[in-house]
Length: 334
Ligand code: PBG
Image 1 (cartoon, helix red, strand yellow):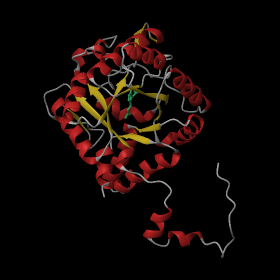
Image 2 (cartoon, rainbow, N blue to C red):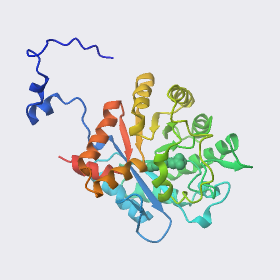
Image 3 (spheres, rainbow, N blue to C red):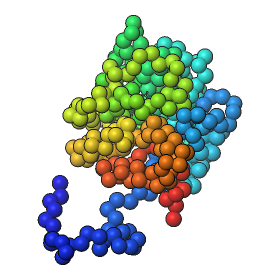
Image 4 (cartoon, helix red, strand yellow):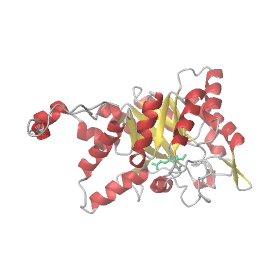
């Protein structure tokens, strides 16, 4: 913590002197947001339609593989360093064990290879979790009402390997099973995939703010019960540090806190404790709230986007996963 020895008292000190004009404000600005801070969260689908709007996320559409490749080109043009891919698959392909998650010719592997071909310089991050592929909407394997940890981890390892084989640069386990980072890291090393990065959803909370996402990937109706036996209780802080410590020891390269704005205290503690590249996910509900309020004329959308994204930087984030990435990058363009 910086110690503030205030140099003087009023009227010798007048903090407003530094705020008197745009040039002074720019000169003393402590945090800057730029396109390089953004990871674009993108939803892909396996249907034929190029774009299917997601009603609860105005401005977001599920893209087919061809459109996803175009989005990767857009990211490249806007200077967005990486994209995070989330799949919506046909309900007929979902089952109890999420078998489609490990199909090497599945939607995500297809999207990854098309996007890599279109924009080789853009990093591709993929979610490791079973929920888009299970008929019960949970991130792991369900056996007699219980999400079984170790069997789920084995499935997640297979999924991570399939995605790494397809060309994913960052695998991002969002499932919150115990021991998955170590298992995935070991499997990647054994497969010779030394350079595949792991961004762990290390401190992921059971949250009301995921609602629109479950709508976007089509797991909202399917989800049985809640995710409280694996995602964290929103009242906890120390537990987030223990989760991060385990993931760091198991081989995570980057840490994520999720959701975003309601958890900036966690971001700050994680950054100060581990000094690793740290990210937050401005999740679907956060996106939807800004869009809904702006649509009603209650807040200024563009200012709210930039203000919230800057808040992540101030809290200690090295970057933010956000559905606003292309819009924000365009706003930030010189
Ligand atoms: C699940 C997953 C979720 C999100 C990303 N991966 C939701 C959940 O845990 O149910 C949320 C993303 C968002 O809300 O934008 N593996």
